[in-house]
Amino acid sequence: ISEQGKNNRRPKEIYNRVNSAFSQLMPGEFNWPQIFKGCDWVHISGITLGLSDNLSELALEACMMARDAGLVVSCSIDYREDVWNREKARLVLGGLMDYVDVCVLTVREAFDVFGITTIGTLDEDSMIETASKLMSRYSFQLTALMSEEKVPRTNHKNWSGLLFDGRQSYYSGDFEIEDESVGPGTGSFCAGLIYGMIQNKDFDDIIKFAAASYILRHTTSGSIGLSSALD
Image 1 (tube, helix red, strand yellow):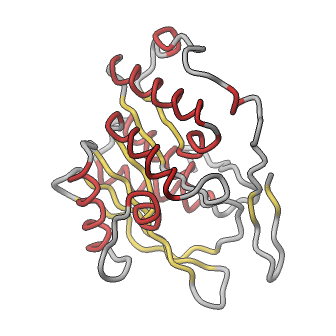
Image 2 (cartoon, helix red, strand yellow):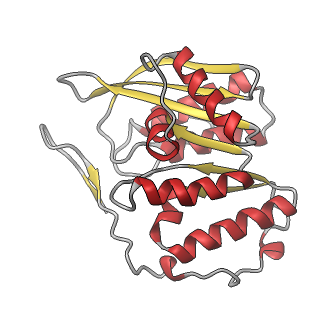
Image 3 (spheres, rainbow, N blue to C red):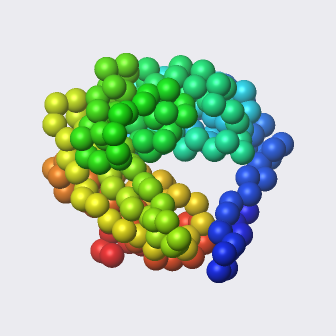
């Protein structure tokens, strides 16, 4: 449920998902080989794993089957303290990472979920350090990292994105964004990233396309990005 903010009241999301039909899904209920026919990519959100233990098992099952089918598996960490605590998230998501090819997260989530700290400000070098620590722990093909800092006494934030393949980094640039939207916009960033990968763009173009998708997300109200590839 999305609440629109006004003046000093910030917009916010309410996660009213306890006992939802989705949260009751169980491993073994899906014919993954049939579902994955004609697919190239599977994406998992960390919020899904936080809703119930059975969904955590189902997500792991899906990722294992996708890996066996030769699909690319991406996961956005999407840690929400309103959904589960750090300890549970670290345990469950940590077990999923062995089946993930592309990991998407924020610098803050790298600390909250994986305990990875970086000395210094949230600049490009610090982001590279964080991504390097993640990729030394897990066998990701790519890590897509975002950083953001609130601009004091405004509704703006400074934001940047980075793509790291273990050897070379690709930086989006720094942006100051007016933040009137509900939700962080990670879904739009992932959409741009995955689209760029499927279109076989080079990494420098991919991170810029993902950044553009994220920024455009903040130009519309509500919690869903409405931009097209043409935008």
